Length: 405
Image 1 (cartoon, rainbow, N blue to C red):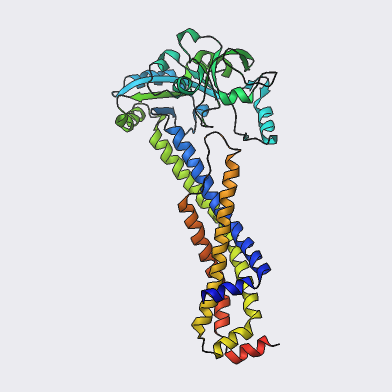
Image 2 (cartoon, rainbow, N blue to C red):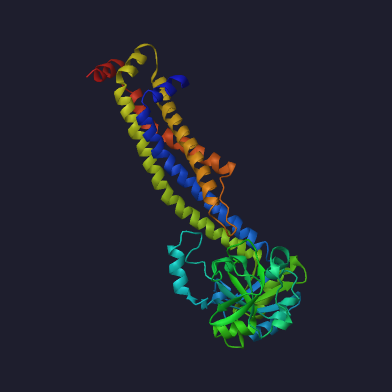
């Protein structure tokens, strides 16, 4: 029966091809969704794995850029048992870089064909240099040492317009000759001429947009009062103590939120889960269209083959045999559409990865391929059930009479 069903599909190639295209596109969408979701999860996971401490923000603020805390909070946290190091930071979106305002950069990023986006904005991070020097898990100094150039900030940079930038920023704001900026070059930030003393490269688009400088210079550029900070980076005596330290900090200062990286990653996972469900609803509409296409294809096929079904019934085929034949044909359509969708998804992610950077890598996992194939076959079978039932329930002589007209 399998060979018979396969031969029936091949005898109507154009109709089969159109059905394949109609169903493979939503399968491609499903696999693309899984690939993008996995890529974002892996990128965030890799980014957070570089950060070991606790970030303290004002309560109900999503990022340090939107947070404001009093310096008195810093002194309170230092007295909490289990806390090893406390490093205050001043954060803010760079007012302008090389004369380009945030609005100008946003418009330019939207018009560019690269991997930039409207959210790809340089951010200033002002660090309390003596406090940060004692940190054991600081990301940017480690990145400068392992994959960067120059040096990181030290006490000699306090009050001076010296900055550490990423290789990405060095490329995004090149010199007049088009070459990326290097250690020793100057870059204008917020109207202030700054000297580049170091280059870092974390490999994450979430971190490689940061311009690191002394906290006093950052407050000046961001017009931030001296008695305020944006966030506080805290290290515990031992990593297992981070959850206890978070609770102790929030108890001592009710107006703040202390977040370990495990908590941040869990919250991001929940957010991605909600986004996945929302996008799956959209893709489900495309799958519904694919089912309608399969139904239409199989209905046309069965209508044209009434004589064939009548002859088969008169030669001993049962209703179950006819039902199985048509259902098998639709299942073959689903299988072929799934294979085509998987191939297109693999090719699409391979090509897309050539243009993506910032730690995002798209890929179609074996699990996603199995889900795509299973979903495609199930869609094909569901689309073929009604045409199969309609063909199977016809009386043999009636089928021959209708088919002969």
